Image (cartoon, rainbow, N blue to C red):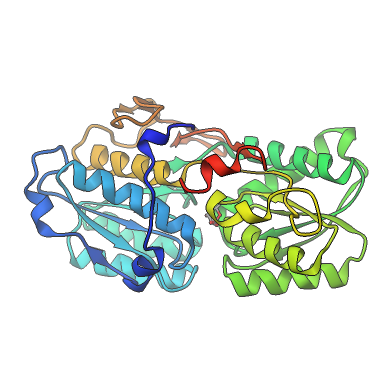
Length: 353
Ligand code: RAM
């Protein structure tokens, strides 16, 4: 995880956001001599305006272009599958070779992805998975079981072992957040030490700042005894941090947060509601998806469990495709373990991603 030499400072996020949908890289890179030469690769993120997604796309583009391919970056206008469908149709027309997609909703994307597959385009997911039949493999940032255990332990610690907590999630359909929440619930049931914790509600901020802030205010109003908010979404965690700090609230915050967005709220007093939080390197996740797409396009891997491929200087390279927890016949690639950010180490990371 701690590999600054591979991480890049990313400026101009707003400028990138203004580019909105498909942003083809210069065709000149296609003339390169790397393993992606002569091919076009696309990344479809969950939505524009979420810095996490921008970092994923940066990592993807960096690798594709370094390997001599042409890169198309597509950020849907809204974090919905409906906003991803026309992008997929456009990518079929553009005859791309492979697509990495962070799925907003598995069900809505099933039919459009059949058309993508029929067009001979290789598909992998990153960050948020699809039904296994809709993709060849999944670049999974970390195991869902580990996220559930880690976040439940954080809630237990920050509540002091008893009392009310709420989850502030992204969208209701997000397969990644839903997998993590299911895992948290399973962990909560698994051991007596969580028995005095009460999950009062799951709120959905849709990975939008304003909606996440409104949902946080509602949690504070509806649950005066609330002790902890756990936000397994970087967009939700940042919005909640600001609301709690502005209110001088004693509610503590944890979850999955982007260091650059949340550093100023880290600590344990009225203005600093987040004692610690977790994440992985989103730039590396984009890089991993790029190497996966290249390996799918050139036939190094087919998406079968047991396939292996090289991923440049990424820490886990060579990667092996392993079974999905929920369907052993389908594959995934696990990138990392959640890394804990604290007031003590956050300054090292806030300029990285
Ligand atoms: C948000 C997105 C993304 C998730 C991170 C933790 O930015 O919902 O899918 O992986 O949070």
